[in-house]
Image (cartoon, rainbow, N blue to C red; front, side, top):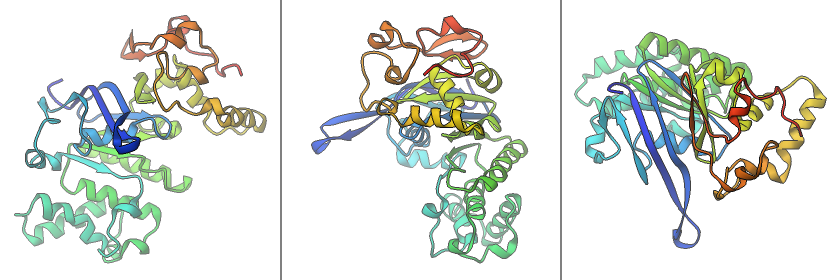
Length: 332
């Protein structure tokens, strides 16, 4: 892909244990592409490596392997000085706006800070106009620009964080759990805002979330991540309508259900010791301890991510057996 983002066999590791002598693999050989103007959803439980992957794309975490290309140019090998030249094209929307806005700065100053850093030659009047315009675009009234973060609601703060990411006119935005800290009533507003901005600006967006319902309302394609690996990917409608990996089926089943009996059964399944993701990768499928459909080869052989046609990829030994999709609910 000449335009957009290309991620190939990316590996991210962190030191752990005494003196950091051992390594934890947070992202394990992940590959995908993101076209200009596309929203790609990345879903999975906490600790699966989603945020590490997003930060690696933006040059905030070093790679232990693989390569990242942006607009046909490899960027993971750039020096910090060289990466700074493209920083305005690649921006991040953080999960917790309270943690990334300086409490001593007004909203207008926080939103304008990237301009002072990345476009230092911009005249003050032009900078003020740019900030005013982007705040209006995200739905923040001018009366809030002189306020401080503690004076705004959670939804207003997240709009300010989105404005700060957009003020430098990026071409790719990584949204790392941008609605998880918000009330349910506000989440929909922010999701709609991101969708509208993407359409208006033609942005590429990697939307990271553990909430499959949120991703289903926004993304065109979906990547499902488990223990640092992509276990299923495909177009939103086909993947959510007919999942081929047991973990994807489990995520869908785990969306809150009004049926109290079914909800209790799912809660019990997730609360069991076997439901915790493994800390270290075994020889076989990392999902094997939680999978009700596992067979012997699942315990001894890591399933490759196979191409099932029409942009669908699945890492499951038995996926051929249910090409029309897994059952609505897996057996206990």
